[in-house]
Amino acid sequence: MKSIARRQFLKGSLAGGLAFALPDLATASPNAEIRMAVIGLGGIATVGGVGGRGRQLISRIRTVPGVRIVALCDVDQAILDHEVQQFKDRHEDVAACRDLRKVFDDKSIDAVAIATPNHWHALATIWACQAGKDVYVEKPFSYNIWEGRQMVAAARKYGRVVQVGTQRRSSPVLWQAVECLRGGQLGAIRCAHALIYRARDGIGKVAAPTVPPLTVDYDLWCGPAPKLPLMRKQLHYDWHWFWSTGNGEIGNNGAHLIDVCRWALGQNKPAPRALSIGGRFAFNDDGETANTQVAVFDYQPAPLICEIRNLRASLGKFRNSGSGIVIECEGGYLAGDTSGVTLFDNKGRKIKEIRDSHKPQEVETAHMANFAAAARSRNIGDLHAEALQGHVSSALSHMANVSYRLGKRTDPEAILASIHGNGELSDAFQRCREHLRGNGIDLTATPAVLGPWVSWDCDQERFVGPFSQQAVALSKREYRAPFVVPTVI
Image 1 (cartoon, rainbow, N blue to C red):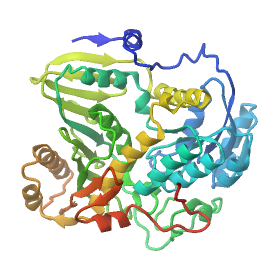
Image 2: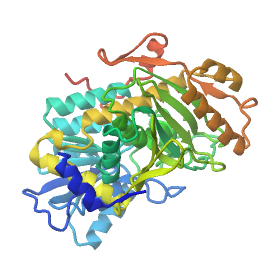
Image 3: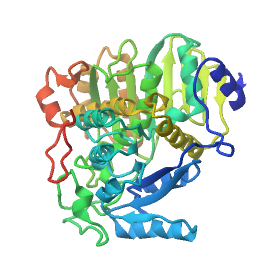
Image 4: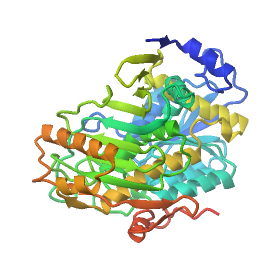
């Protein structure tokens, strides 16, 4: 067993031509100040203690040398006022507005961080690019596949630097893990696993539409999405679990680890086909998206499998990991996440450990600093998670959800029969079934949804084959004027 220190890693990486390092924030000397706005601050007192991504980004941005937050934007006046007060308490000047179009009209702003709900990511990014601003946009990169392609096209057409917030791409641990795989230390990769075993609670049920907070401009909040009655108790954060605004857990935390697995596999395009199995079990709430899901992305020669578990009991582990990546290879496997990665041989004995002392917040800061550096160099090749990378990874989450939404409830034995021959997927489904049993769910009585294979033509960038017409319908939406996501040519 060997532990690799950060200093040794950086020295070895730079010697090998790997242009990566966490920034030394104490000694950095940036050439020009970047004036930045944060759009979308997130809930303050949301049930479950989640949300507030924009406010989290503020604390990261403030530690990046040469970057200054000059404006805040949120459709909820109460949240906006709360954060403005934080700036006042620090004796820092900041402008504030509710309508993001005012941010784009302000020529003194160089860049924006977009942390809105998913359904706003594309239009906000495209408007920002059209206004000549660089963009840091949170994951998932897009709300649907078509929007992701327009975002990439806008970045190219208007010459903007666009980074997606998959900050694991700026983790020294994961960079070295990928280098180990590239170097063949464990032999050829056989399968990549993205594991998101995170307990959540249901969001409850409502008997009738609820009234959005009086401090919210609900029309602007809905923006490109249909302006539907609010059928949930909480406006903020819980939009993740509704198809009109969110992409479920596989598009939320799944976006991070699917991206790392694709990076490890060296795959630079969406998978040629995908299939999803899952359901929303036990919660008995108004949420629509799956809280338990197994998705396979049929890359060759090594597939990528994502497992989502949100139920609290029996979360379990796979290959010593309960949340993170597992890369199975001919000579063993690699398991871990940003805090550390371990290489094992085929008998489960440790071969090597890769550790780093940095906290997750520091990795996020490094990712933002990488964006700032690229904004100065104007070289998108400097970015760790450039727009196209974000588009490809988010497309995988969307493909899985398309399969799921086209699926039907199916007896578990029929599911096993239909995936017979795909050993990794069969094993993942059996693990999922055991997890559900541990939560009192019998799939014979409460069947899971088995989605069909949906196929993607990477050259034509469209769904093809069986179910392609239905898949296309789920990959682009009708928009409400004036919040229309444009086709960018």
